[in-house]
Image 1 (cartoon, rainbow, N blue to C red):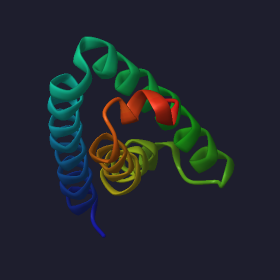
Image 2: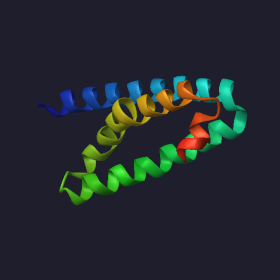
Image 3: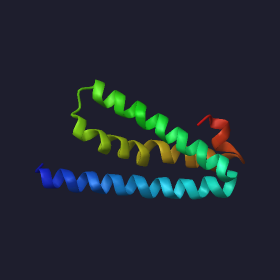
Length: 97
């Protein structure tokens, strides 16, 4: 993969993650107000730090960290939080994010 391809893939991953977070934020705001959005924000930061740490400990180059975090947001964090929001009123708060 050329560096141009890597940059394009990274930009796409980051754009998808950002869109997923915006959608989740809108759902959290509609369901739980500002408190739910702030809890989502804290959960995102905490989880992203953990994913970045594990990625670095696994020996991945630091340049891959943003892409790894973006993929985690899109494929794991957001779908899980959307499921929690859909299950019960206040689901995000009950999941402990």
